[in-house]
Length: 104
Image 1 (cartoon, rainbow, N blue to C red):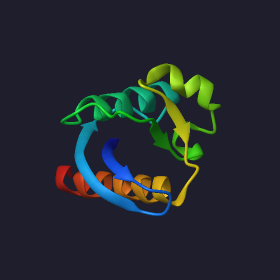
Image 2 (cartoon, rainbow, N blue to C red):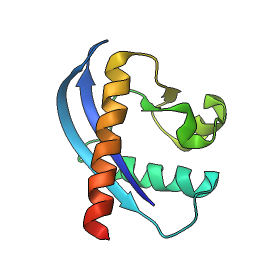
Image 3 (cartoon, helix red, strand yellow):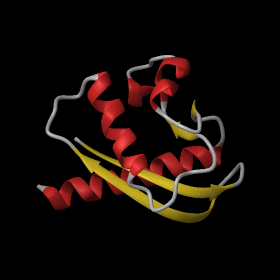
């Protein structure tokens, strides 16, 4: 598995600037705990810690409630609520797919 974290400044409808990216890879199978650990490592590999929430799609963490997923992240965690957040998650997906292709 490969994960990418994107630290971006956004508004409600788009990405304004990408501040940095962090990546992590693991050979473990896709379980909730393995995914949480992988994403936490990718966030930890950002050049600067994010000052806002960690945002992901519901499916990334097997539809678990945000309160459970949030225990693994600081400053806070939430699921996508705006178009700008969705664009940022999509950028992270594209970065992770590209990194995976490089590793294969």
